[in-house]
Amino acid sequence: MRISADTHPFFAGMSETHFAILSEASMSAEFEPEEVIIREGEPANRFYLIHTGEVQLEADVPGRGLVPFQRLGPGSALGWSWLFPPHIWRFNARAVTRISATFFYGTGLREHCDANPTFGYELMKRVSKVTLERLQTARDQMLAFYAENADRK
Image 1: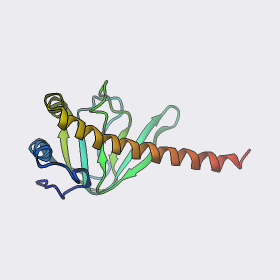
Image 2 (image 1 turned 30 degrees about the vertical axis):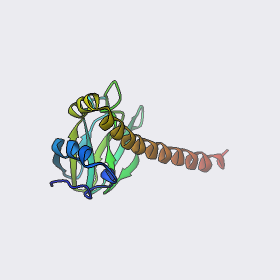
Image 3 (image 1 turned 135 degrees about the horizontal axis):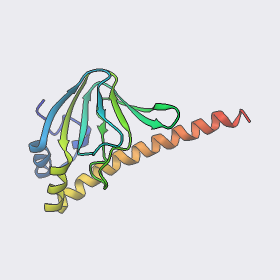
């Protein structure tokens, strides 16, 4: 799938110059149901923009194994650990349904960010927005969990 500025919400309002950098670095990716896309603890060197399908995020909890904690669907971005040292995945991501996505190698994008700080700042704002949304979702889940379990005491 060749990307265009209206292909994914991640690109909304992006300058043509910055979009061109991402467009040149983009590649299509597809995943089948149950296929692992990201594995916790492995080097983080890419990120994905989900076009179709659902992805399950999972955390490896000692004594419990993989525990699902969030689902992502079309219009979502997957993976931000490529941008933050030590560049290691912090969770697993598994395809629930067939996935069509665009992916980018983080190493090359970090080099673009270093060479072009304006692009780097724009990319950081967009990835930070995704990070903030995930943290808010985690907060909401945590509050719901505590509210449910407060009644059990």
